[in-house]
Length: 78
Image 1: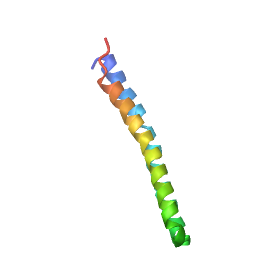
Image 2: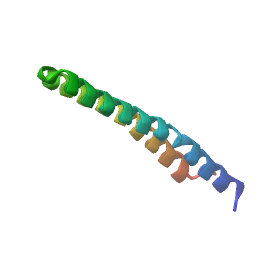
Image 3: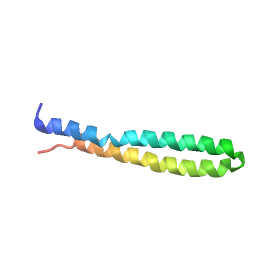
Image 4: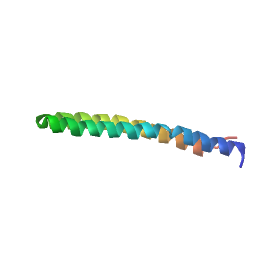
């Protein structure tokens, strides 16, 4: 393999490391939502709305990481 191809594959793999943090963040978020609704069911609408907003923000990090990985992977160098 050419050195540039190896660097592209390595860079794309490193760009996806952030996806592990996204998975942990989503697990923590939804665990906290379930716990909050279990403790106070009357606040379920507020907690769900805020939770969905945070879900979108956390998921945006994953999309940015994948976009960077694809840019690194499919850019033609030279």
